[in-house]
Length: 311
Ligand SMILES: C[S@@+](CC[C@H](N)C(=O)[O-])C[C@H]1O[C@@H](n2cnc3c(N)ncnc32)[C@H](O)[C@@H]1O
Image (cartoon, rainbow, N blue to C red):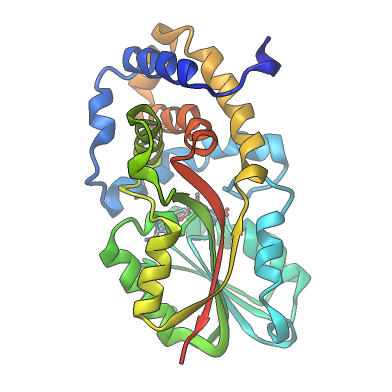
């Protein structure tokens, strides 16, 4: 019965075989040379279609793993005195749902959001025009790996499922240098995201493959591990103050999604016909089919990292 299914090695092997029938050039999914235009195309094609489906299910425009606003609680917990007139920056705001939620709760705090896509800025701004009481929000187009428009002093800088798109050491370093320059002395950087697991290389090949495919479907070269963030942050003299593992909380959603994907993979010809016309949705499907395996079998984890200024 579908409700008793769980991701196992046997099912992973079966799904990988079926995926190869759906996505004939599955090998190309291992390509890891995605650039900003690939990410832009992916979100331009999926935000207002695939992510709309998520919105219909959750009732929220947030483009992240639905967990009852848990992710935002970790941001709020770090706001401290910023609730009385501080400044908060979100990187990769998507449809702007996180900032709209926070700006409504904390009207005395100034919120800035940056995102790679013109479409996201336009959508978030038009949404904002309908919320006339929210005057403490500023959405801008910018690249979090080397922001040029958002220079200011921030009490909190956060990213929810967006820092994973900083998928090279160069981009991570560019972002962390910006954070170092832009955080107040007691400010906090909050990263809520998926990560490659620390022992990724020791996992069986199929389990590694599940994560490689999940990343590629999301148009990400390599999700940094928590260790990578810690090492690079230390190099910029940013100190870790919290590290929370939320894998067990994120997993039930991904397993529900996987059950649907696992069932659909029984009709590979139908999926193949549809994805030939909607390539980015096909990429998304590969991620949705593989993420539960990666999280359940240990090639990925989900959680929160919090950093502050070091000496
Ligand atoms: C999965 S969505 C998450 C959106 C939002 N954080 C949320 O929780 O609803 C990832 C977002 O990161 C943005 N993004 C990806 N790479 C980026 C970059 N280098 N700079 C700024 N934004 C980026 C994408 O455009 C997308 O809006």
